[in-house]
Image (cartoon, rainbow, N blue to C red; front, side, top):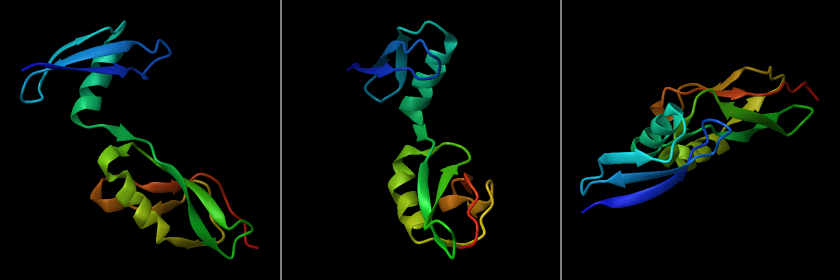
Length: 123
C-alpha cells in the first residue's frame, strides 16, 4: 500500500510544494515537485527525522529583566520539544548573563546546547 504526503519546502525562498510517496513500511519511494535538490534533502529529513530550532525564554535571578531569550544552537528533534521546554522551565540563571552563554549543555542528551541570545545585566 502506497501513501502520499504533501510538504512545503522551507529550505529556499521558492517554497516548493513537494509530494512524497511512501511504501507500506514508511520508506520514501518518490519525491516530486522540487525545483532544486534542497527539496529532496528537506523531504527526506522531514519524514525521517524532523527537527526544529527552538526559541524560548528562561528565568533570570537578579537581572534587569525577569526572562532571558534563548535558542537551540542546532535544530532539536521535533518529538523532544515539549520535554525540552519542561526542562528549561526548571532552569533559573543568575545575572549577569552574556549573549552566547550556554544555559543548558547537551539538553536531554540531544547533543544540542541551549544558548542565551542576549545579555542581561544585574538589577
